[in-house]
View 1 (cartoon, rainbow, N blue to C red):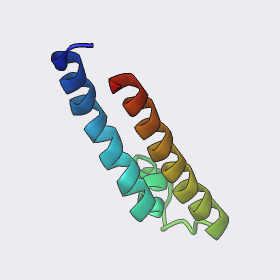
View 2 (cartoon, rainbow, N blue to C red; view 1 turned 30 degrees about the vertical axis):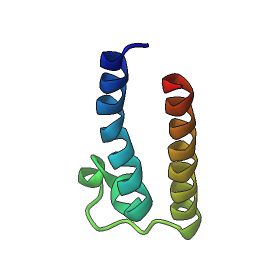
View 3 (tube, rainbow, N blue to C red; view 1 turned 45 degrees about the vertical axis):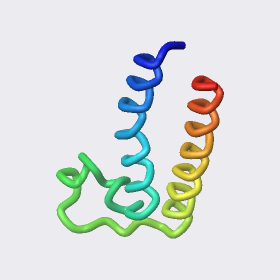
View 4 (cartoon, rainbow, N blue to C red; view 1 turned 180 degrees about the vertical axis):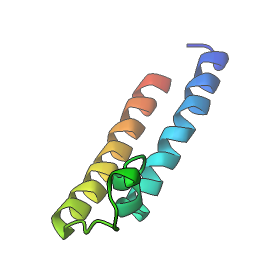
Length: 73
């Protein structure tokens, strides 16, 4: 793998990292992103769904990091 491939891989993975970090810190907003128009009032999201969203974003961050490290090295 040459340096250009590694550069492109890192550049395209940065938005994914930003999205996953945003999902971890603001799970309610990320769950309702693009769906707010469906509700007249602010929907109440359960704690279980928030916890699941946070855990899944952490797992995705770890898996993405492992895949990137394996690909680069």
